[in-house]
Image (tube, rainbow, N blue to C red; front, side):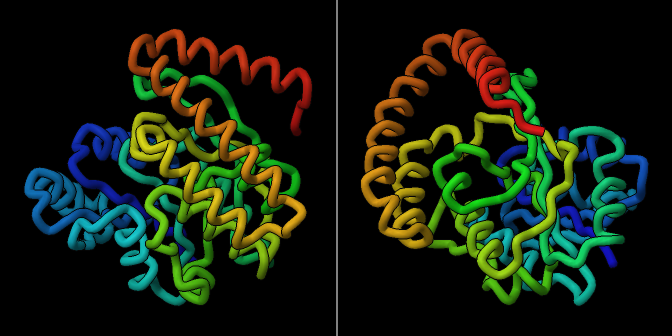
Length: 275
């Protein structure tokens, strides 16, 4: 049984270097696959050096058509006994024992996917909050971002992902949340109590929030019952205006945006603590 860390990178040398440092700091030797476009000359040169050094296990060169098609490339090529953990360029492990915690959980699990908590970081590198793993994953909580799981803290059985046909590439931003819900319908998954990764904002999921909002509306229609119909549209409208305001604040004064987030998470945890 192997846990293969899969990193998708395009035009982000600084991000892949940050992830590399986190890979090296793990207290276990691990399997690391990097997926990058064929024409990404600078990135390719860097990861090829890492492969020679024995840090990168495998390089997959793709056509650069998007994050999720690149992830699907790794799924298609995974071996029979592999588990996949998608940690993209710029993302890092929560601590030096994160990989070991997953290996320990896999030794006893009967499930086809595992999920833990994660830390949320700003695009400047500041840690803002810890988002614990929910006690139970539910599609409604995930798709309304009430108690959600980040894909950077999810580890899937590779053959299970193949049976799900991987990520739905019709979604550019929210295909990971769609995949988790589809996985849940077959296997409820297993919770790991610790936080496993750090997700830094500033990427496409941050800058394209309105697109994510539209995609999540479609995904809720697909996966949730009709009783959520009105709530789903109300949530969509609320997020539309909220996203516009948040993006404006982020551009004009990112420090204020991060302070607001810290306060919001602090009081949220006091009002509804999660273990």
